[in-house]
Figure 1 (tube, rainbow, N blue to C red):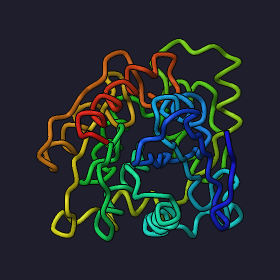
Figure 2 (cartoon, rainbow, N blue to C red; figure 1 turned 30 degrees about the vertical axis):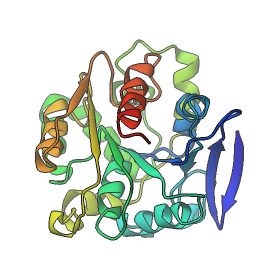
Figure 3 (cartoon, rainbow, N blue to C red; figure 1 turned 180 degrees about the vertical axis):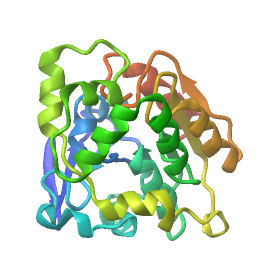
Length: 267
């Protein structure tokens, strides 16, 4: 792994040891996390498939700028972060966004182009309210604890397990992720709920892959289908995975379809 600075942004990078494909990949993390979530499996694995693979920690996240004023950052600021990194890569990257990162990617497309995008358990273009209402009925304790995390509190260990994983994750690994998680910007959450949703009229759609997880309690499959319907693509609901699909032991269930799709586009 190479940890580099793109200005004041933390970017993790894995490059292939052999021939390099022309189009790099840029991974965009979701709320409460940072670039580290891609470092576990996805970055080294996609590099081994020939892709220069980058993951940005958005402003206020990981080791990027602005941790002390996290709540000031909007989804538009996160879009600017992605554009800043994408503009410094050797070629225009495929964007792969998870959860909140998927919303950032959708908003990015209002102002920028990409050769292709992947939305993984993405906040739908209709916003967060649908999934929040569903969570309020199905797992009210989980919604309450997520709100507490947003306010700077530490999550319960069981909240992290319920929110992110379908597998019976071992305690040691869960504790490691627990200590890497962080609060999220109130402003960004409100943007995704109501105030800054994507305008499809402003988006020039590239090829798009929409992935959801069978056991996702945060962005359940019906929300993934809403996203796919809005963009007129067929969703893929991945069996046996929870919301944190790139961190599950069966992460290849998510990675393999992305690789096959990229190859089908000759990227």
